[in-house]
Image (cartoon, rainbow, N blue to C red):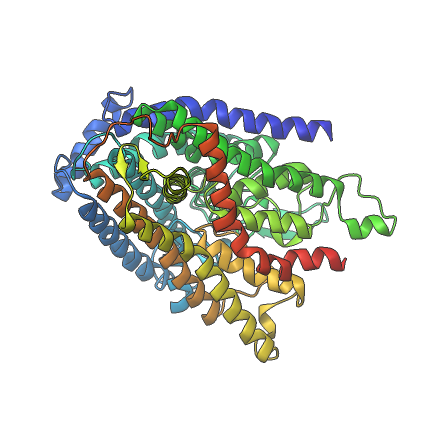
Length: 565
């Protein structure tokens, strides 16, 4: 047990130690300061812009940034649909895997383009290598989109009045070449050296210890897994994701992949302090996110390492903790750490089956996605948090009788309306989707019997988790759910679309509108946002607006399951 705890403490300390210098490096990229990688990638950037005809020096306002983002994402979606629906006859298909149905291709295309990576298929049997490579490309570019649009928001938050917020394509290319590509390359090398496959050959035939012949799926796994973790994508090459030993061979790779989950989301907070020259504000945000993360992590680790209370009452010992659905090479502690890391961010990868988590652990995993702002995804994690900052500043201003101001800009009715719409969209999508699926199942359980392997409280939790994961751009699942059906593919696909782009459009609009307002220097009456008091107010707003919205649903699912045991 002490070894497991030491491993978890080391992983957290390592990600913080790496995120601080990485954040400064990302800040230099956003500020267009010289970095040691410029000599390597400047020629590549120039070639890309020359071939595409894009002028990276042309300044854009916030509307033009969003127009570019939505246009390029639309083109990627169409291309992905074409590939996935025609894999059977396209090249790089040595295992002769079939093409996808239109509704599964729709769900998968939306999922990977939006950085959600919800998977209603098993990669080793449901995709050709060409399909895997296309999805791996989206794992790069969707993460690059998130970092780029975060850079736009950082630019808008600077202390001046302007409607020119840089060039979206320039932010995007620099994010991919100078941040994602080098780090993913390092991760892929480590995975490759530890046994993860990296080949275009088909299935390999091996002889098992029992003397039987067995075929093992292979492919360009190491490169795929590195960017899946780094870009908070989470889509696995195999159906079992990082519980599969070919994606995650040993405890060393498990530590690397766990660190990669939170590395860039955490680094972007420190990048904010560097870009705005407001380190205290960055520390307040980091503190709130850390408290939220640890408040979910600690009880989950305790619950999983102590095992099931139902089994304890029968006298069955669980010396290794609750090991159902977990890999022995990782243990219950590291699996619990991964579960909260992947749900507090929008990563969604798994190294254990979340459907087997104890009821309260499942609830804490759900809460990480329901809050959707404790580090979150690359770029969009801070953008979600930005909405809560605006709400907290407005409420704080009303409490002290001052005009709400943030970084020298007045927050007025228009910004508040947008912020509230974005904040309420998340619970709306989750609760409406769960209510609809529950209604269909309850009124015709025979027709929808294939949906749930676990009816009752846990079955409700499976449906709640699916919509929560989709709305949080997470992608993990309670895999007792039979989700590859037209209803689940279309319903979650629509949720993923709305939950990805509206929470980007809203905060970027708020930041752009505020940037265009007159800058007012801070005075004695200004509400300070870089203090512990504001941090506590911010945490209270997150708990009230986000977490409590879901309490009735959690009562019907994991809480009811816990008390029924």
